[in-house]
Image (cartoon, helix red, strand yellow):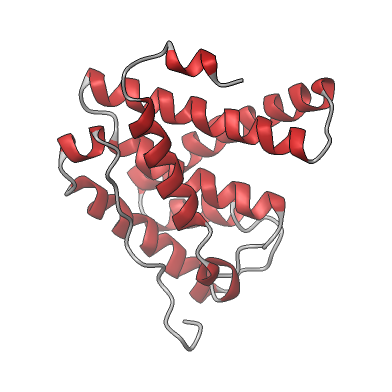
Length: 181
């Protein structure tokens, strides 16, 4: 099923590793338990998109990084396709949902990029509209997530280019302490 991905370049293992790392980070329980992200399919998808945005923003450098970012994107949507098939959704339903998810992804990327460029309030507004659309995030939760995005972007900017091309990435810890702050 994933044979088409192997034709897209030599960094497929790196793309899988980067995608796995961003999904693993997005599945950290603290984002849901203390952070206020809805623990639903939509909430998990939106948190994956936040992490994908940060990773893809980091991979805007060289042509090799841009190619790797495209491969990670392809892996992400292939995984979403496979997940829907496992849930019993048919081909027509998958096509419609993937199209909607792709549109959601692009809209969020534009909003998050604008938010990062403009500053805390603009990013907080974009996160509130998208990531917290199904919940009522407290001002503390929204502020923590906004700060986390900026911290993660700073962290990602310090990572070695060659390490990223090998599929090695890390994210900072979720911004919540044991008390839920």
